[in-house]
Amino acid sequence: MTRIYFQAGPTTLPKEVMQQAKEEWDDFQGTGLNIMEHSHRGKDYEDIHEQAKNRMRSLLDIPDTHDVLFLQGGASLQFAMIPMNLIPDGKTAKYILTGSWSEKAYQEAQRIGSSEAVISGKDSAYRTLPVMDYVPSENDAYLHITSNNTIYGTQWPDLNAFSHPTLIADMSSDIMSRPFSVDKYGLIYAGAQKNLGPSGVTAVIIRKDLLQESNAVPSILSYSVHAKNKSLYNTPPVYSIYLLNLVLDWVERSGGVNEMEVRNQKKAKVIYDAIDQSHDFYNGYATPDSRSNMNVTFTLGSKELEQQFIKESEENGIYGLKGHRSVGGFRASIYNAVPQESCDSLATFMVQFQEKYGK
Image (cartoon, rainbow, N blue to C red; front, side):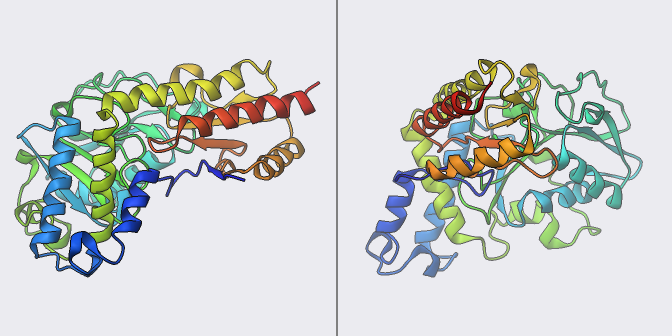
């Protein structure tokens, strides 16, 4: 039986990417070595490093005003690096809270500098996105958003709708899934393990005027230092960047970010249709106007039925559906590399399960 996976991350990589990595495992392009065994200062790896940056630029139409960095530590390290580098004296960082990850980013900023939560969707248990009515202030260091909320299954529908002189976005779970205007953002960061590749590397897109040197920031945590050293200040996560480059190549060959958006909308629709047409047998967690195309969250009427759903879904070769403990129920994570066929199979199983256990 073919296994189907819907993990929230790390998640599925394109099969073509895994096949190429397998073929090059012990002999990268005739060198007799795995790419991990190459010096990060050597031409073989440097070519990959630059290809990955250039592909990021091309796919997202990143302007020359912005630099592309490949860092380590995941998005969680960015929660700290951003306030360390970008909250000057006399300024306050502003955060919009739409879920657990934005809360964690805000909590980290509070430890480092002046910060304030200016909008929050917590009163709705993060089932719906709050009204975005924040007016920028001269006191702002930056405004931070989280574009997609993996735990609750909500996603800002229009990434071009925000307006702030220094807008910062955690796009870890939906970068490369739809087009948007990079030039509207001061900084974008994304852990790779959803849409870009494996864990171990974090992409940072930063406007160059924000690359300010500061003796108060350790070198390893300075955006300016990493930019000056072309993300090679210390040994980079070579294999993660190698795979990221292969994933970006796959996105290019698949039609680019516009095609990813079309595919993702189609994949999400087939599962949401199974929920909406179930006459409340399945209950979507996120309100329809806030639904994510990356993480579909839903519940059933009882814990016993939910346990049976997990049991039978795995018996049918469908794995990774258990929801986050803070929400419960189920979560189907359908990032770029998850194929349409997997979503179709899940929707079919959902209908069959309802026919079996529905009243």
